Image (cartoon, rainbow, N blue to C red; front, side, top):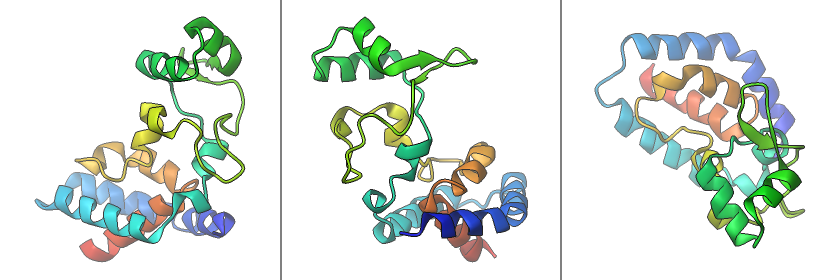
Length: 161
């Protein structure tokens, strides 16, 4: 997968995407949640995340306490030890990875802790959530990292134009 190609396309379409999503927020169609679910599923039938894993290479998730407990338990580590080994607190007070790419990303682009991965990882890229227009800023940002998010916005534009 040519991640740079999708990044370049997303950069070129930033203004168009921002305007489209802003209009969507002003006047969301009644069937928007159903439509976004359909498009999300169609995009992920087309895109294999393991061919990309760009999110795992460059975007670190925020860790909830539940995430930390679940992963540390799986790894048979004490919470403090897990946090000291993998996490740091950022300027917003959030717990994030000390460094990227994700230390649990294998050379095959598969996640070593997939079944206990952080909530933020499970929900990314958030294109299947209800009221998608509530996270326009995040969707725009994610188009630059995630080819699936770029395709999602493009397909949503096609369907609603």
